[in-house]
Amino acid sequence: HGDSLSALLRSADIAMYHAKHEGRGRAEMFTAELALEAADRAELERDLLLGLERDEFLLEFQPQIEMSHGGVAQAVTAEALVRWVHPERALIMPGAFVPVAEESGMIVALGDWVMSRVCETAARWARSGVHQRIAINISTRELAQADFFLRLRHAMATHQTPPPMLELEITESLAMDMDERVLGQLSALRQDGVRIAIDDFGTGYSNLARLRELPVDRVKIDRSLVRDIATSAEARTICSAVVGLIQGLGMEVVIEGVETQAQMDMLRVIGCTLFQGYHLARPMGEAQYLDRYATAPAVEPTERRSL
Ligand code: G
Ligand code: MN
Image (cartoon, rainbow, N blue to C red; front, side, top):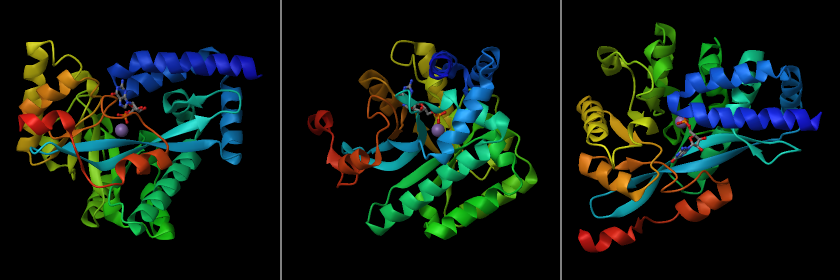
C-alpha cells in the first residue's frame, strides 16, 4: 500500500504548490479532488488516523522578523506549521493532508494536537524568557466546531499558556464570513491578550467596511501581492496601496512569502517593517529555531553602513 499512497501524496503536494498562489481555499479543494480521483482516500484517512495514534506529526517554526530603522533585525513571532513524518516518506506538507483531515472530521483531533503542542511550547518559551508569540493556523472546519474556543481555552489552561504568547491566523475569506458568536469569542480572546491575524490577505474578497470592524491586530499580506513588486510598477502600486490601507486602519502589516532581497528593499521603501519568507528563513525545528532566534537582536550587516 505504501507505493500508491506515496504517489498520491506526492502528486497532492505538487498540486498544492501549483495551486497555492491562487489562495488556500482553492489549493485545498484541488488537493482534495485529486485525492478523491485517485480513489485512495480511504487509505490516506486510515494512515492519518494511524499517524495520530503513532504521534507522527511535528511542528516547524518560521520566524516573522521585525526590521527597525536602525537596521536591527529581531524575530517577534514564530508561525507554527504542522508536518507529517510519514513512515515511508520524508516530510509531508499540510496541503497534502489537511483537506482530507477536514473532510473526514479528523481535523478536530489534528487541530487539538496542534493547539495543545503550541500551548505547551509557548508556555515553555515564556518560562525560559523567550517572549516571542507563536502563531497557529486555524482552518475553516475547526472554527465551525461549536466547542472550538472551549477546547482552545482548555489547552491554554492545561499548559498555563500566557495569552500574549499566542496568535491565531484566520484566512481572509473565513474572516469575512464569521458569525456573531465567533466574533464575540475572538474579541474575548483578544481582550485577554491573544493576537488575531488575518492570513493570506489579498487572495479573497474583502469588504473593507467589515475589515475595519473585525477584532484584528495584524494582517498578513499574501505572497501573490508581493511576488512581482521588484519588477512591475503596477504590482508595486497595488501592494503599496494595500499596505497603506491596512496601516490606515490601525492594523499591523506582515509581509509573507518574501523570497528576495530586492522585494524586501522595495517593501521597506513602501513602509513595511515585518517580514516572513524564505529569504529570511525557512520553517525549521524548534531546537534550531531557539538556537537562531532566542538570542539578543542582531544587527543586519548590509544595513549598518547605509543607515
Ligand atoms: O497559508 P499560510 O500563509 O499559512 O502558508 C504558510 C506556508 O507557506 C508554509 O507551508 C510555508 O512553508 C510556506 N512559505 C513560507 N515562506 C514562504 C516563501 O517565502 N515562499 C513560498 N513560496 N512559501 C513560503
Ligand atoms: Mn499562516
